[in-house]
Amino acid sequence: MSAEELRARVAELLGELPGDDDDLIDHGMDSIRMMALAERFGVDFMDLAERPTLRAWGELIRG
Image (cartoon, rainbow, N blue to C red; front, side, top):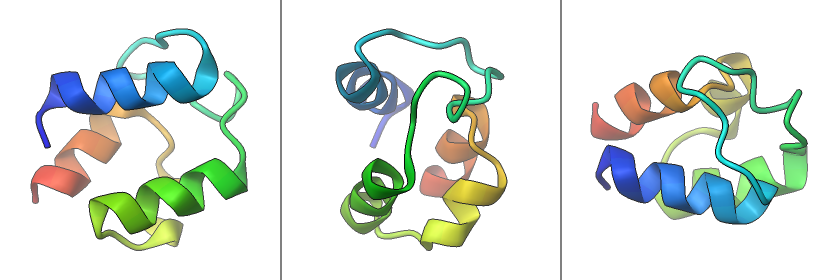
């Protein structure tokens, strides 16, 4: 998944596009949405929860 695809998915879920280093939880990302994203991206939920930013998630997903 590209960075742009990740941004689009997160923006769709939150109804807004946060900055790369914004805390996504502060923008309304909840654990249920994070679990769904973790499953879709094939990553561990806790990895997403520990660093809830677009930048960190992009690095995690791209390996």
